[in-house]
Amino acid sequence: MTKKALILFVFICSIYSEAQKKDSTAIKNGIDKPSLLSTHHFGIFSSRINQNFKIAPPKQSTVEISLISGNNFHPFVESYFPKNPEIREILSNTIWHDRHFNFIDQETTPADYVNIVIDAVIKEFRANINIPISKQHELGITFRSYLITKGKYPFSLFTGDESIEWFHSNIAGGEDPFGRRYYGLNQVNFEYTDRNGKTLKLNNGNFFIGGIEINHFYYPSFLASKKRHIHTNIGSHIGINTSQFNPSIDAGISLNTVKKYILKNNNEFNLGAGVSLLRKNVIDFKNVVDLGNNPYLGSFEGNIEFTKYTKRKNYHSFGIDYKIQTRYSKKEEADYFKLLGKWQEIKAGWHNGVATLYKNLTDWNIIYTYGHKKYKVSLYLKEDLEVHNAPDFQTGISLKVPINKK
Image (cartoon, rainbow, N blue to C red; front, side, top):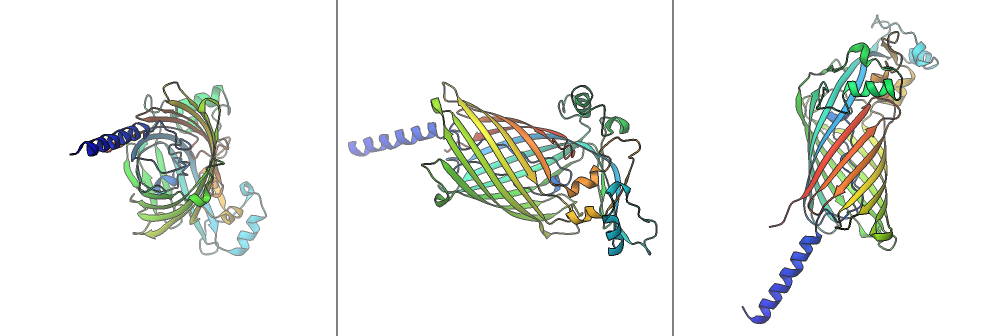
């Protein structure tokens, strides 16, 4: 090797080494947001879309591992959906809890029938791999699995029944407004019968693989403004659901935008907004359980994040995230369904197991992330302020590390 070639080789190696030092997760890439998808008792069987608030593909591949815990509770409730248009019209003119319907004789008053009861702490284990394809393209592959538990201490410190009922009794909500104490704490009762007579049932300790998700993100330059620090990405999504209750394929699209503000001392303030649309069950592999007859799930998500850098160029970021998702079942059915449950014993929410399937679901998340040169750790708390119990309360922790290039 000549002297000039040796100098050139050393120069190139030094550039590559410096790039590797900078190419770490400590360099912010938009908004830090772990998976905030809820442990909804229907949602866990389908793929849903995570909004992406990064401003560019990562410079090197990353692996993120997440552990999520959510408390879902709905007392047993039955629902009848009359098929006769005249009966539907009559019921639609009466408030839902005062409707009368002869559900005994299927010959004279035919109706679809559904029942559901949900009581469990659902644990989600999620592994996500993100691979940069080019300067404008990124591929993500996610594996998700679930464990059904009673939520006893110490494994469900914040999401167990005892913690939630202590909060209701001593801080907010009133003494046991939804009947957890009436039915018993630390229980698993997870069963659903759809309108076709198919039954979904899970017991304590049941573990299943929910599915695999493939996500592609494109960061087009024509939708970005470096001068104004505005960045946009377009996502295409495919979900392969692998549980025995919903073996199927979902498909969807998303659009996300991030506005970045650079503050004093290079601290950051970021605003993010994203929308998505998922078509459930584009392909069914065999007879599946009817997890809501609305084939599309749309969502909007907004995020505000502040980042404070340390002297060592690590950082702390604090974010508030709001999400709204469209209903699982067609809205018009709520105009005429007849619900039956133990309303005499339970003060509120006895009807939620069915009624909330016809409502848009919203939640708020508080997120904290610590970014180090070699890893990121994120923690979050999710609260359902409208008390739809889908879930009532959820927590999550995730660890993201780069995959070093050899």
